Amino acid sequence: MSKKILVLPGDGIGPEIVAQAIKVLQALQRNFGLDVELEHGLVGGSAYDAVGNPLPQETLVLAHESDAILLGAVGGPKWEPLDIALRPEKGLLGLRSELELFANLRPALLYPQLAGASTLRPEVVSGLDIMIVRELTGGIYFGRPRGVRKLETGEREGFNTLVYRESEVERIGRVAFEIARKRDRRVCSVDKANVLECTELWREVMQRVAGEYPDVELNHMYVDNAAMQLVKWPKQFDVMVTTNMFGDILSDAAAMLTGSIGMLPSASLDQDRKGMYEPIHGSAPDIAGKGVANPLATILSVAMMLRYSLEEPEMAERLERAVHQVLNDGLRTPDILSEGMREVGTEQMGDAVTAAIGEAA
Ligand code: IPM
Ligand code: MG
Image 1 (cartoon, protein in one colour):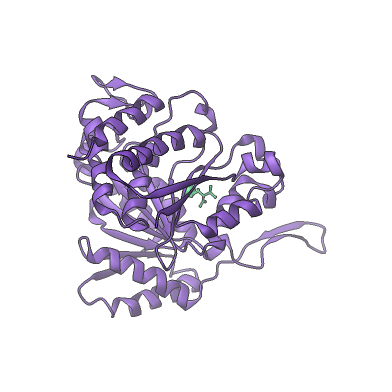
Image 2: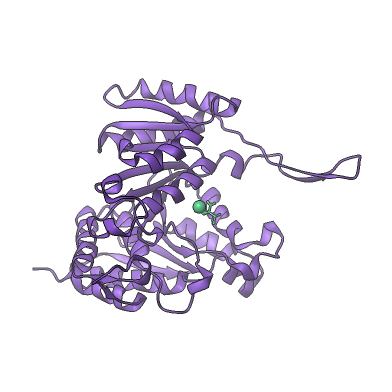
C-alpha cells in the first residue's frame, strides 16, 4: 500500500524549497518505484491568511492520516503583530504536540566540500558529525501555567513553566541511546542541574536510562558550558540529548558550525516513527520569492523521511549521494558560495539534485 505524505509548504521561502523536494520525490517515484501519494495542506501564516487559523482542522486531520509530513517553514514579520495564539509558530507547535512528535533529531554534519564556509577554522570543524536529540513536546514550550498577569501593584508579570515528567525524560533518553548505538556510542545530556530542579531530575533519569545501555557512555554538561564547548571543540560530541528550549538554542549554534544553516535537515518522530521532516532554518522572509534560497536542507529532510518513516534506506543513501555529487560539481547557492564555485539559484539546485539521482540500472 502506498504511503501518504502530507506536504505543508508554509511561509516565506517554504514554498520554493519544498517545490524542489517534491521534484526529488517525483524522480524517486518515476525512476525507482517509490510508492507514495502526496497531499497538500496549509499551515502557518499562509493558513492564517486563508482561513484565519495557523493550524486548520483540515490540516490536522490530514496530518493524522499521513505516514509522514514534509514541512517548509513558518513565520514572518507580517504576522508578528498577531496574538501569540494565532501566530504561524502556533501551527508548527500544534502539529508537534497533537501528533506527539517528541523526538527531534537534528544532525549537524559538515560536508567536506563546505569546510571553508564555516566561520570556525577548518581543523575545528572538519569531520564534524553531531546528532542533537531535542525533546520537542514538553518543557517550557508547553508547560502550564503560562501567561502574563497583572499584579496588585498594577505591574504586569510574565511567566512560563519548565516541567518534565520522568516518563518524558525516559523516552527521549532511550531515543538518544538507541541512536548512539548506531554511531560512536557516546551521549552527552545537557541540563542546568546546578540551578533548575526540573533538570536535576532530568539528569537523574538520564543516569537511570543509561543503566539499560551499558555499551554507551553517558556524560552530563551544563547548558552554558555545552554552548561554549560547541564552539571551542565541537568534535568532542557524538549524540547530545537535551530539553526543548536548550535544544532549540544549541541546534542553531551547531548548525552554524557546518557553514550554513541552509544545509541541515531535521526529523521529528513519534513513538511509532511517524514523523514530520523540515529544514531547521526558518522562513527567511528577507530572501523569500527571490529564487536564491538553498533547497538542500529540505531535500536532505526527504532523505531522513525515507530512512525513518518510509523504510527506504537505500533511496535515502541515493539521495544523499546525489547531494554530495552536486556539491562536488561545484554548485552553490549564495549562502554556501565560495571562491571558484558556480553560483546557482533554488530551482537550478533542485534540478541538479534531481538529475544526480539518476535512473535504475
Ligand atoms: C525551531 C524553531 C521553532 C522552535 C519556532 C519556529 C517555533 O525555532 O524549530 O527550532 O522554537 O522550535
Ligand atoms: Mg529554532
